[in-house]
Image 1 (tube, rainbow, N blue to C red):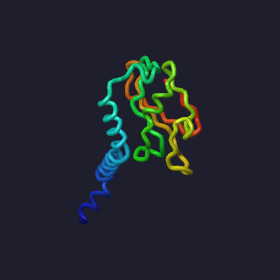
Image 2: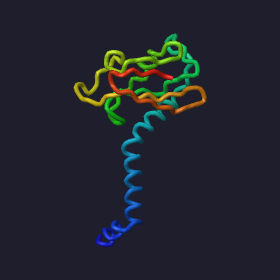
Image 3: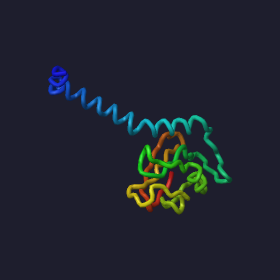
Image 4: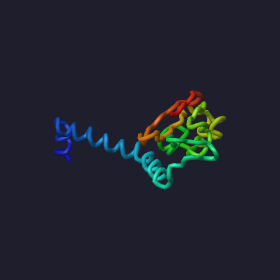
Length: 135
């Protein structure tokens, strides 16, 4: 155990510690979001119309409302229904999203992963009570 401590005090040990920390954070923080996005986008074809609303070359792959990656409530269907003439214009909040999560907690936001034309995997995050306009 002493040799591991000594190694961690060297420049090489510091670099390995930083790399391991970045990998760990990526797996813990980003992976759940990527996994849910991949699952939702791989199971669906990109629709050209949703409930009569033309999307054109704009498609919403995932929309989550909440505090962060492991604390999002999936509001994809609701956000897709708000698209008019190929554009999304919404004031982020429980009223327009018809969803109240983490009541009273600050820091809520809407995360939308979308495609526009040839660009896929685009991402926009907007804080509560701010206006989101896409694309």
